[in-house]
Length: 411
Image (cartoon, rainbow, N blue to C red; front, side):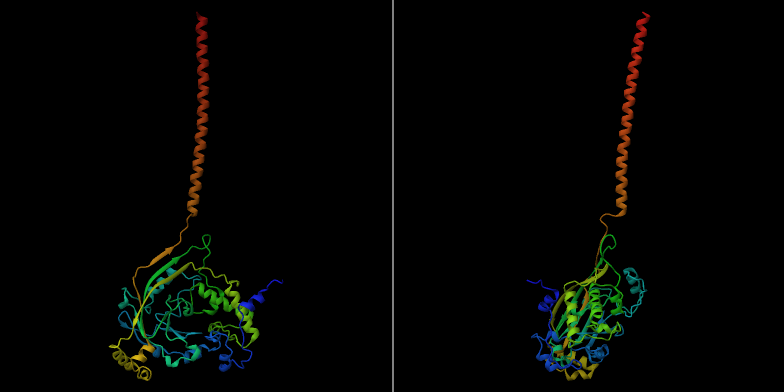
């Protein structure tokens, strides 16, 4: 029996392509794409719609329609620090308390101390001096279900990703989903991790070349960012395309085409190899890392007694919302309330230290040598003393014998 090759295994276990009868991708032939989808939930069609960053910015949810109310530390938010970026799946995303473009001095590997000093001098960064929900961020969000598009709007809600200011978020991997018609409270506790590299471990703070290429505004190394950027670099190298909007950052306009059989097979093969961790990505754990423990709770929102007051407040901001927000039912289908705050302003810092350092090694060597040298000197002295005692004993014996002889001769 012939040995199974990688090509055979890939074709049997992973490769999926059945769009031979689909006529076009730009614009998409939706009727045939839906008809020949191989999955009941149409998950194999998620990569069909390939919009540019400018198109997503224009057609996606706009900030003024998405964030209806915002307070931080009991004060109305300044929308200036809110940074907009585009995501392949979630469209327009907004980062509160952003400091991009990041202006920390270029020091190679990010340094936590320099970053902390920079944050203290940056007046645009919002800070809270007290724990608790009253001193955190509160948002009223509008999901605008009437603007959802068929298979690309299968669920309604908001993805919330919590990260450091200088770190790229990945809402498809680590975000919390909050649903309309509810108040979601997220209590945070911060943890810092410091790991030893070099002789003590295999960690790094240096961004890879692919990360610098695809995440041009980012300044910190993360394992997720390394893995994703590495995959795009591999696709560009072997398939001459990229399957993410990040390709625009790298000035690579070629997006992978589903209807190009050769290119799609190459793309799936590279993803399969990456899934099996057979690609040479070298994505080590970071030497410096900050994470957040999250405690999540929910309640129904808005209440029946509050909905009228809420809607009047929203109309005062923008009368256009009257068309789809006009009663309790539409409010619960479209509005979500979010609270993000610190449960405690203290944090846990977990750091690695050498179990056996160079100082300890030299100290032990010196102590051991001192012990052995000390023992040797004592032994030598004891032998000398023993020889001296023997010599003195013999001399004394001889002297006594001579005296006895003299006395006998004199008598």
